[in-house]
Amino acid sequence: MKKNLFLLIFAPVLFHCGSILAQNSPFIPTWKVGDQWTVQTRPLAFGMPKRPGYMMVKRSREKVKVFFKVVGQENLGKTKCWVLSITNTLLKNISYKIYIRQKNFTLKRFVKIYKSGSKESKTVLKNPSKAFVYQELGILCPLDFPIFPNVLKTQVIKTTLGYTSKKLIVVISYNKNRTKMRVQMQTKVNGKLLKSVQYWERGLPWWRKAERFWGKEKQEIGKLISFKLVKRKIK
Image 1 (cartoon, rainbow, N blue to C red):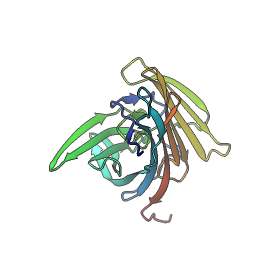
Image 2: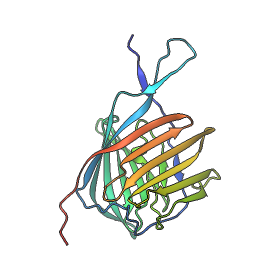
Image 3: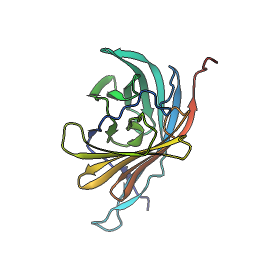
């Protein structure tokens, strides 16, 4: 019997974390307008149970592709930002536009764009110079945005979520040669531990791999599968 699967759905939640900003971190991508890359994710799915009162949990067979493109540079007030367009193969009527501060590579503005026929609506979230963890329908970890510490050493930062008293812990570690960085942001949501983990490498336009955990379940896994960069000038 064919089983119907549906994706795990959460209400939108915006998380902030304390400032440990980096202006010259070697892990900050050196973007140019026109750069583009593709991330592939596999979200956690739930199926209809054989017996009432039970829930079947399994990894979705559907591989979701998320497409990023650096579409321009824009000043928001006095802040110069990179502008990224984000589309995906799961929610084709929903796209995103994010604005990244060039001075410290933190997320300044997050725009969700919903299209229904000829109509379009937008949800705009303004973010301080802090990390950004966002829960959405379908795609999760491609929309998380970390902070890049200035000091290349293992560290644990304890802070709070935005304007609430919720605790947030950020754990940052590196490999021996400091060519790879692991960033983990964790907090409690509905009594369960939520962890967003990203693995960054020098020279890449985005993280190499990312994972989202909620309690004992791995919500989503993602990986960078391709990128195309515009031609750089040889110095």
